[in-house]
Structure formats: structure tokens, C-alpha cells
Image 1 (cartoon, rainbow, N blue to C red):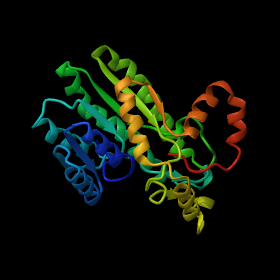
Image 2 (cartoon, rainbow, N blue to C red):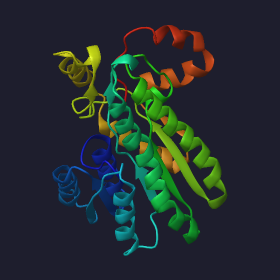
Image 3 (cartoon, rainbow, N blue to C red):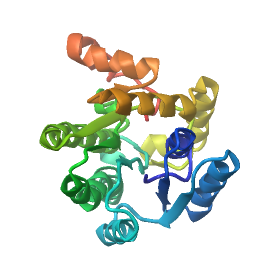
Image 4 (cartoon, helix red, strand yellow):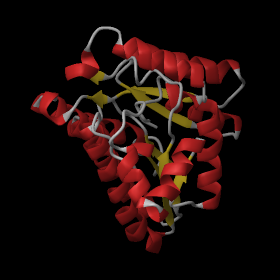
Length: 264
């Protein structure tokens, strides 16, 4: 599991541990990753191994996979969860920000699948892949073009991968959480007017007030794996956008012209 050091990754790791899973946890935040492993240990879960990994770096992901496969033949469940937020109108966002969000949010998912899926397929015992997309994969607002592009791409990749892996008995799910109270907003890149003083604090306070927790997302992720769901919206606004995009596209077009909260 990537991005295990906080937020949805940490909550999902704890949820899987409660179900008896043996876990491999990875993050660029070593301290947060160790904290997650400690929480699992104190809760009486099975051993959770921690690995440092930068998902944007193919070599780093490959080294992580080699370390895992030196001890086990293949993963049963792969969760590509690491991601960053980027906010700012198109003319305000730098190409550096575009490259960073695509390298982490999209290529991090591709790198994880490329490193772990061959062993899962070769083992021939099925399995499951969880890719964290976003409600922004349904609705692209003008304040988040780079982020929405990365998550639309994750959604499309997951759909294609699901069809590809079906013949191997491997399920693939795109998780689209919604407005979730995690550290992603506080750690986001914000440019242009979105980077003005106080804007990030305002959005963070909105998320805190909304307080839809990562633990609720984790519960839905476990359910999605059990049911082999193709797409798993989580919060009410994520479900609304999921259906509205399909049945009332004109409404979505009007909504995207308005200022919407940052979406996970």
C-alpha cells in the first residue's frame, strides 16, 4: 500500500489489519509510515512492514517490489493510494506543478501496477488492485485542472486495467472519496488566486467542519474489494457527482462554472 503514512492510506491499512491482513506499508514520509505501523501493532494486528518509496520514481517502486517479492511470491491486494493536490486556474499553474501531479497521481499508480501485477498474474490465484482516484474524476472544476486531469486519467486507466485483468481473476477498483478530512489540502500546491494568503486555511477549515473521515472511506474500500466494484464513490457529494455526470450533464456544466471546494 502506497501513501500509508496518513489519511486514507493509514485508515485503510488499519481496516485491513483488523481483518487479519499482513501489510507492506510504503510512503515518502517515513515517520508517518512508522506511526501507522505502530498503530497497527498496538491494535493487535499482524506484522506491518514499512518501506520508503517515492512512487514518482520508477526505480524506487521497482526496488520496493523486489524487496516484497524476495519474501512473498505476490501480493493479494495492491493499493495505489499515494497522491498530492494541486489547485489553481490553468493560466496560473506552472508546468512544474503539472509534471509533479502527473508523476505522483498518475504515474505512481502505473508504476505500482507495473511492478506488482506481473507476479500476481503469474501466481494465478487472483487478487485485487485498488487505485485511489477522486470525485474530481467525475467533475473537473476550473480551479483544479491539473489535479482533475490526473484523476480522470487514473479513472480511465483503472477502467482499462479492470477489463484487462478480468481474465486473470484479478479485480480492479477505482475509489473516488469526495470531500474527506485528510492532510491532502494542507499539503497541496496552490497557485494563482488559490495561493493567496488565507485561502488554504479557509479550505482546510471547511474540510475539518465537514469532517467526513478517512475511516469511513476505508470501510467502503473493504466493501468494494469484497464486491469487486469497478468504481466506488464514497461521500454523498461523490455519489451525487457520479450519477449527475451520467444523467444530468448540463447541471454539472453549470456547477463547474462556480467555485467548488477542493475535492479528494
